[in-house]
Length: 256
Image 1 (tube, one colour):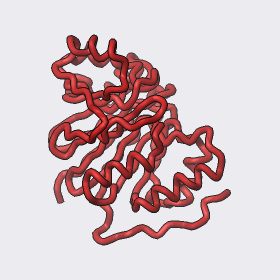
Image 2 (tube, one colour; image 1 turned 180 degrees about the vertical axis):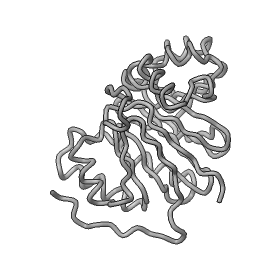
Image 3 (cartoon, helix red, strand yellow; image 1 turned 45 degrees about the vertical axis):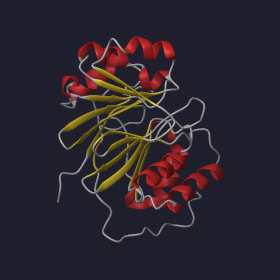
């Protein structure tokens, strides 16, 4: 079996590993094929760096920084990361402030500004392209080691839309949907629609965290059972491929 991608949640408001700092926001490290990609930077750079050090993930080892959208709880640690490691390829989309984009050009090794269309960033790593929402957002799509994943910051366009774009890009279903699903203010009907949409897209595993909200996380746990993996700061998740030929059969009732 090839080396499987590994994801470590470095910053999250959801509890995870004891002893790490928990603040509002999200950041994760993706390790695959000798690459280390930092996805978002949380809301506080000092806390992010302390969590990274505690988890044995020094920021100097990161080669790429992917920023999903310009909200403070996802780019708050940007200055701290670049101060410690300016030798980064930074990936963001055209919906970020033009002034921030201009400033960043002199603060990192390379700046990649993604447009509306999907874009390959490296072998097996893609941006969905900028998706319309408030604010605009793009997701990270992985196709590595026989595993596919779609990772969101807050899923403002909807997690199903990010997954759908990833599946169309790869020409096959997405195995893992990971990140903030932006359902913290959703009612039961909206949560159920989100679950059904991901089921219809044949997502095998979900990791709903950050802005997903407690009721939605509970509903995903009921619908996906053991295929709903706990998020939270410090969680380390090995991205397993779905069993060969499997198509998931889900519970039809996620109500409480």
